[in-house]
Amino acid sequence: MKELNYNYYGCENGGVKPVSADTGFIADLNDMYEKLRNCWSAETCPPRMRQKWTEDNPSLGQCSITAFLVQDYFGGEVCGILRNGGNYHCYNVIGGIVFDLTSEQFGEEILDYSERIPQSREVHFSKDEKRERYELLKRKLCEFVK
Image 1 (cartoon, helix red, strand yellow):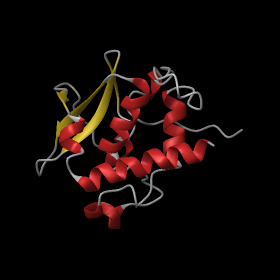
Image 2 (image 1 turned 45 degrees about the vertical axis):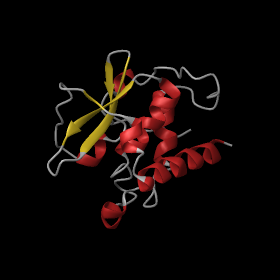
Image 3 (image 1 turned 180 degrees about the vertical axis):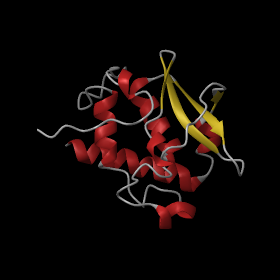
């Protein structure tokens, strides 16, 4: 069995278990991350970033749809870091611990998770394109684990 090197922010606490009863196929947050790495694609990346998406950087552009999907299974809240250009980089706070399954997309850049600005599913998914990418990622995850 191959061992995956977890490098996302918070991975040292990635043994947290899902809170949703219908997630028997996901053992813990590290397992969710491993499965998502197989589901992220250019299709699930925002159109404005697709040309930059590669298999070497699969989490590029996946933050909000991933954070809300993680929230579906693990609870907690989705927070954001305001980036240049006015967009938010989304991540999860579960049991007071920060988890950012898409932090690797920033390479060596160190993000500041101290402000924890709450993010709303309704606001993010008011954009059809983002809601459709979330639904696609959710379908791909469900199909991957079958």
